[in-house]
Image (cartoon, rainbow, N blue to C red; front, side, top):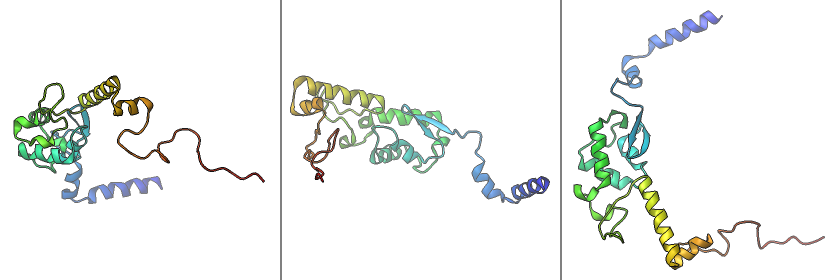
Length: 174
């Protein structure tokens, strides 16, 4: 009985047309994991979505970077060469130098330098943490709210954002 099953599987493998089989067989230049700007991206993901996975890069900026470098947006990321990856990282570090509009950067008019900067990955995390610490030090309203662990951006707090026990509903004693 087991011999029959194995022979059926072998027959099925032979019956697959070549054009379908070629979609599953990757060429030797294909990489299954690609490292773009401090993040590992699966190689079968289209380049547009792979760039949007990088922290600090949204869909619009990813499209702008791809258009600037004349790359195909839906080409799988696993087919990128080392040169293309280095160009992408260079554009992501300083997008204004490559003609990307200033409104697309995530740090316009930096308080320390006054320049338009763009941070990605761990640099963005570090910068956000430093900004929150500065707000706590100067004791501005947002800094106080951060210190107390409350909502910062004007959300309502009467019913949401509570920690601990539920408040408001009491059971009647019987």
